[in-house]
Image 1 (tube, rainbow, N blue to C red):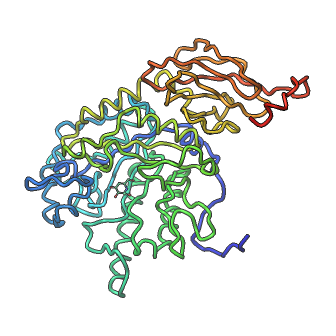
Image 2: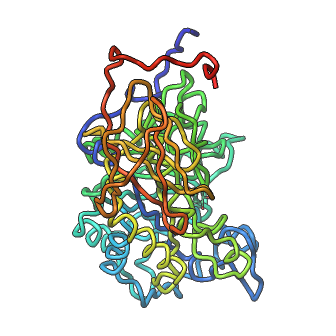
Image 3: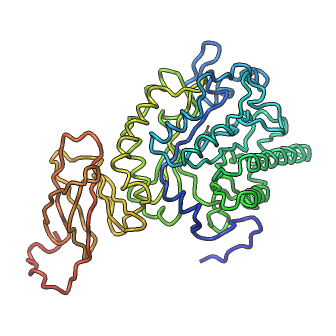
Length: 458
Ligand code: FHN
């Protein structure tokens, strides 16, 4: 194993955090991402042209300069913005935390920052969106993480790369601005649980690993126990997410974006991680275009992603893009109702759960296990045409009972051999079926039936 290289600005801790705040984040498993800002108003179209790319990238897609884009501030009246209704929607979804865009790449701040005029304070209603949301979500027992884009298209001192002393001076001014904004956020909203960083892929940011290290230190000093995603961090050699010795920086890996690890990839269970996913194929801000609408995932596809994430020890952050007026679109409310209803009766196999050790990926769904009790759950998301579900048991394991999580009713099963039990499921079922398995270790010293050598190895 190669000798670790000495680092000043690498990972600040080793292994999983095991404090209460991190245990809560891990237990929550399911978060709602909110992308809302000026981009939500044009929703992917500009001057009568629709751009079938992510709505929040419209300035790039349509070649709109910062001054023209800033003109949208006057249109950001958000008559339907109702923080309590947003918090109720998150609760109905079954989300246990929410991550909200305080500032996205366009630099517009959803809180009245004292460091710039480009904020909600300049909008017709001038409401402190972040402050009202933090209050409403917290009042519903929903933890809040603030999304902050280091990338800032609006700020004159932003640089994509540093290629001169002038660039360096300008970007240092920008990093000071961003650092003071983050101090401001942590000071104004001290009961947020974490910070979700984005827009850290440019050379200019990778060349400032020390700044990212200092930001992590500052936030955790201002809010003890604050949770920071790995996407903030670079080390002094420009390594991102994991330092030059491979150690995870920040508190959980946040590199799974619009994708999950393979369902059989148990390597990811070694650390905390979160995957963030969209309902359309690729738009985080609300996009009104017909082509993008055709890419919307079915709610049950999103539910399966949640179960898959939990089966591999991760969290799922599911994105919603409220419309410019502050309302949610019907397709998003469908997702809320479908996932919320399922979680209402099946949440036991999600919240507080993680990988079921020894239970390999079965193909017809996922196994999860309660991290405290060890209870094992089988969640069927791909019902075979036969309706027959075979469970390959870990060695020396016996299933004593099985019950349907949603109803608590016993579920009959047949023991096929000492490593296989078989369930019959309702082929007409149109939602994932979750079973709680009561398992015990088998005493293998007991008499084992003679194995027919002709069958050995089948
Ligand atoms: O460019 C952003 C995008 O708009 C969105 O915020 C996602 C969320 O993870 N992050 C960036 C793309 O990687």
